[in-house]
Every structure is written in C-alpha cells, then in structure tokens.
Amino acid sequence: MNRRSVSLVLRLAALGCFLLPLVTGCAGSSSAQGTLTLRVWYSTDDPVERGWSQTLARQYERSHPHVRVTLTDYSFEDMNTKLQLALTAGKPPDVAYVTPRGPGIPAYLHANRLLNLTSAAKKKDWASALRPGLLTSYNSPFALYGAPKGSVMAVPTVVAAVAVLYNRRLLARLHLPVPRTLAQFESDLTRAKRAGYTPIGIGNGDGWLGDDWYQTLVQSLVPPQALVPEQRLQPHFSFRGPGFLEAARLLKAWADDGYLTPNFGGLDAQEGIDLFFHGATLFQMISSSENLQITQDEQQTRLPVGVFAFPRKDGGSVMPQSGYLGWVIPAAAQHRGQAIDFIDSLLRPSVGELIRRQGFLPAGASAGRAAGLTRLSSHQTWLNDYLNSLKTAQPGLYIDAAPIANLNATMEANVQLLLQGYEPPSFLLTALEESYATRGAKGSTARIDGEF
Image 1: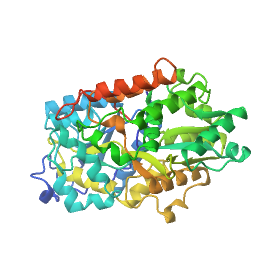
Image 2: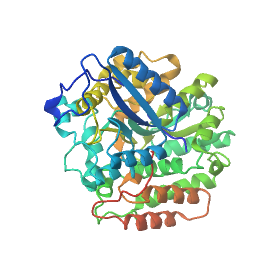
Image 3: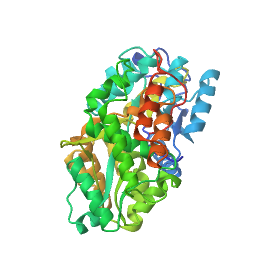
C-alpha cells in the first residue's frame, strides 16, 4: 500500500557538543578537523519521495562540509521492524522519522527507548514554530504509552489533512459553485450523475479512502469536539450516536445510487487518483500525503483542479487533520545534541517553504501566509486552496487513530463491506463499538496502521 509519505529537507548541526545544556552528555565525539556522521532513518513508501530526500541530504552536506548525512529510506513496514531491533541492540540512528501510530512511536515509548525532548522544545520554543496547538495535540496520546504527561517525545513537520479535490472544468460545465453545505454537495452529486459523469472518485481496494470518507462525514454531522472523549478512551463514549449511523447511511446511499467510481473496491487509492485525472470525475476525497501524485498527474494532464474542505451539514467546513510522521531521537543516539539541533533546523520557515514547494502541507506556523502562496507555480494553485482550507476549516479528528488495537483496520474493512453492500449501516457501528470496548488503560501498541 503506497500512501502518504512525507519528504523533509535536512539541515544539519554544527560540529561538537555545543548543545550540552539540552542533554546529558554528547556521545560519539569527533575531532575538530574530522567529519561527523549523522545517521537519519526516514519512513516512506513513495519512490519519488526517496529520491527527493536523498537530494536534500546532499544539499545539506554541501552547506555543512564537516557533516556527513547518511539518510536511509525504509518502507513503513521495514522501519517498524529494523528500528525496534536497532533500539534493542543499542545501536539506533541519531534521528528517525516514524509513524505516531502503532507499532511505531507507541512501541518505542513502551520500551523506554526514546529521548524526552521536552526541555529542548521549551528552550527552542518549538510550539511557537508549529501551527497553534499542534505540538501539544501530537504528543498528548503518547501519555497512554508511558510518556510523562505534557512531555514532547516527537516533532511533526508536515500536516496530514483530508479534503476534497474537484474538477474545475466539470464544475463550471455543470454551472455549479463549490458546495458550502452538505445538502449542496449531495445536489452536486445528483447533477453530475445525470450528466453522465462520475460524482465521486474513489479507489478503495486498500480501505483507507472509505475510512476517510466515513470519519469526515461523521464530523460533518457531529461537532468534532464531541469526539474528543473517543481519543481519550473515555468509557461513556459510544459509536452508536445518530451522527455515526447517518454517515453510514449516506455512504451506502451514494454507493447504491452509483455515485462512486465503478469497481472502486478493486482499485487502490493511486489508481483512483489517476482515473480522476482522466477528466470525467467531479469530486475525489484526498489526503495531503497524496499530493506528490496529484502534482505529477496535474502536470501531465493539465486538468484544472481545486481543493475544498468538506462542508458541514449546517454550514462551515471541517477537515480531519493532525501532524503526520514525527521526528524522534533514540535515547542511545550517538549525537544527541546535533540531532536536537537538526530537528530545530527543520522548523525554520525556509524549510517549510521547501516542503510546501514539494506539494506537502508544512506544519510550521508560518505556512499558508498569503505572501508565500503567490510564489507557487501556476500548476499548483490547488495547493493554495488546500492551505487556505486548512487555515479556515474547523479542525477535525482522525477518529480511527484512537490508541486501540485494530480500530483502524476495523473501520477500513467494515466501511468497505458497507460500500459493497455486504453489511447494513448498523453493522458498521456494532463492529466499531466492539473494537472500542477492547481499549486498555494505557491503550495498545499492537499494529493499527502505519499510515494515514
């Protein structure tokens, strides 16, 4: 499953142990005229991202001639296996870019293998460098796995967010504005179907797009703040509320009415995007980690596209969002001080600009300002839409990411069965409720999903 990986530019630390106040000791010293090697492990399943990350590593070596970067790309699956082995053996990399979902960061925390970055975060004021509240919300779930409450164990540099990609040409041909309410969105689906177009593009062979559709629809009907207890594993929370059932019924109705891509269950997410760019599909739900593919397809087809946050039932919009993968420093890293300075360098506005130019949504507080958006090339105007939607939409939650073993897999599998007509809407709620009932006091480090 090739899905949403995030590329980051690497800026390396100066030589020596000049950041001693931030950590205790600075192992692995090198001579003043020698070369310090900073070992970086990076999670991605995207071959394009791998090439880009390596190019950026070389660029930073040119800027820091006394530092050598060995940036090793691993698939999500390989990273989970290899990093746990390296942590156990006491020979980990200096920095790693890993998933916050099980078994990633939760497993590393459970084994007490990560450096606590709280003091560094305070000294460097990382919270202010990121989008408001992001550092706190990203680290908050880690308390369920043994991290001290209020601590910083990982730092995101890219935002994961769900939105709707649309075909500007078709929307204009149908004389429709961008929908501002759920009723308008449904009306657009009907108009597109009658005109012979595919209303909703989706490749759901791997399950996660149906999952994204469901949780976004739930938050169109239910205020996202009402879902916070689910993230905290509160016993009074239930998936049997009316919004959950209505969202399931809507999805099933859309599938029954033929609004979805034909054979969507046999297409993966990437094939769904490619079909959208054939030009006969009106809407396509996307995650920001698909932006590399969207950029490539748009450049090849020149199809004019835009992005909007999903409309809420009563007006306004909602966008499920969070930090994506996070940067961590193993407790046994050789160059702790340099690793901390390396993370700090990734939060600078210039790096956020580079991330944005690759098509991603930077986590930096300066991202999305109007002055920067105008510098995007003409074929990336949809990214302006994405950034503006992220700025104006009500923040939503990834309700499939609560720290419960198999909750994500349960939602993906049962939404797929719902869309294909094998289960009624009520069964989806029953399955989710049963999965939620397995929650533990400290959550689970079992595999949920490596990606978003």
